[in-house]
Image (cartoon, rainbow, N blue to C red; front, side, top):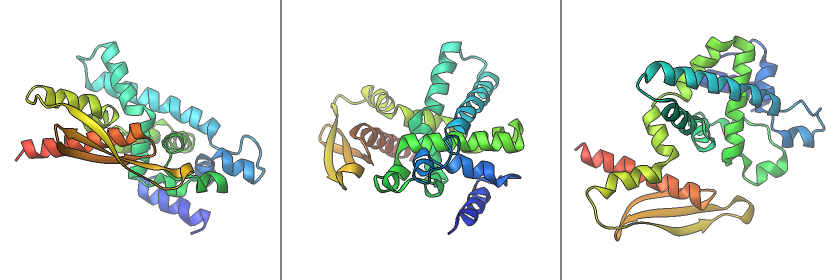
Length: 233
């Protein structure tokens, strides 16, 4: 698939079609690609990411202010942080398979860059910046509401799933919660860790990630979903 077809596929996926497709291409161009092909320093997504980050902050702040009138400033700050932090934005990016569309240098691509949280979250903010420049704040807000500020309770839970799981279990269970590394696979530059979370001797969740921390968070998140589903039966 060439760059034009890939861009159109992503546009169909997100429900926004650019008047100026070069804005989309800029948002998808990582600095490693620009360096490899000797593009000008500004021909990658770091500047537009800066803009998208600011747009995301104002839209998420406005959303929390209007929809949670009983939240204090501190509570809103913590909630916003959980919604726009790197792991949560990377999770949102994976929901639209954004990594498949990013233009990466060969070395970055071979080292697993398309799955790296930092690259995915930066690309998502860049995409927000591109939509803002191309279509204005209303279109950028619509994208943010659809793909980032939807289902915020689950996303807040994902951000700090270990704490949520601890709070869920400490009331009714005396067994200790523990995390165990069960597998490590892949080359050193693209290592994947598999973690299990246990309640006593019982495995209640399994997760994987490119760090032990992210794998543990994923395991806790999967445990929360499973326990919640069981309690609703």
